[in-house]
Length: 113
Image (cartoon, rainbow, N blue to C red; front, side, top):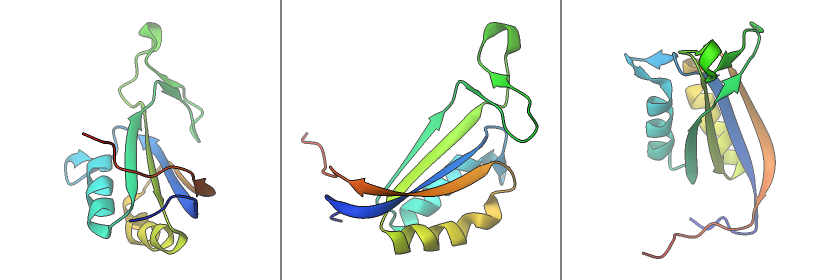
């Protein structure tokens, strides 16, 4: 897949790490579906602090240890792929937030080795 110097979309999904799908972390299902769908790339990051609609701060700080830290999934591909993929997973997203941004892919190559 050639994305270098292409206009693309970045889908970002943010939710709490306690969100599950079939007794597994939700990110596992989303990444599995993205891979099957042929999305160019997906990354999952566990955040260290967040708050959202409930206005409750979730943090790794020792005095406020939270068991529901933020999970951020970032997916990048061409517009039609991201749009269709989001439609295919929107039923999984009970809470959290999802947004799409236009991006220009500057570098997209397999590392050597």
